[in-house]
Image (cartoon, rainbow, N blue to C red; front, top):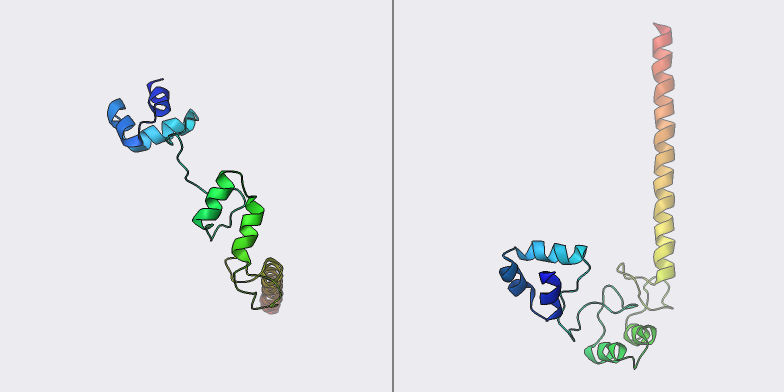
Length: 141
């Protein structure tokens, strides 16, 4: 109960931990269990829904999204429109961490999976041939 009151008062994590005579990690975990936010009132931290994982929106766009003036999708497009084109197709902007647009990235992943399947099939054939060779040796003895 004391944790909830201190968090609601806007006291920081370190002060709460000292007051309760606990470690900061244990206070943080207990707050998670009880679903108590340790953020101070008005604190604007964390990612915006729809924001790219590898890029942060510029400060003015982040503020506009927080205040509800702009849509996160529109803000994201404004950021990505200034980016590089995909080196594979040169038609769309780079959207993934691999440096490709999403369709090219997925196409490359599919090719890699097909190659892995071909390797697995080749290993199976090799194992089958080795088994036949082993059986032939055993039969000839």
